[in-house]
Length: 62
Image 1 (cartoon, one colour):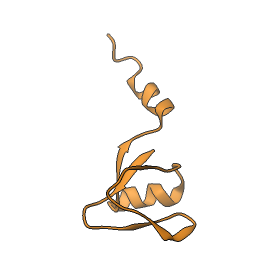
Image 2 (spheres, rainbow, N blue to C red; image 1 turned 90 degrees about the vertical axis):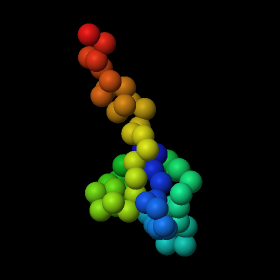
Image 3 (cartoon, rainbow, N blue to C red; image 1 turned 120 degrees about the vertical axis):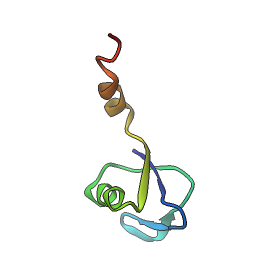
Image 4 (cartoon, one colour; image 1 turned 45 degrees about the horizontal axis):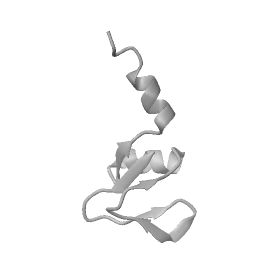
């Protein structure tokens, strides 16, 4: 999934405390760590993985 940090935040990447997610969008795996940061509002999801997005769009061409 593609995410960026909420405004005025720097969020540590999983497993690398000295590497941060900031305002530039990055691709991260949908692990519990990142999903929890999204649920807490620290990360903003910009897009889901392509396969998941394709499944969500299925059936809307009625």
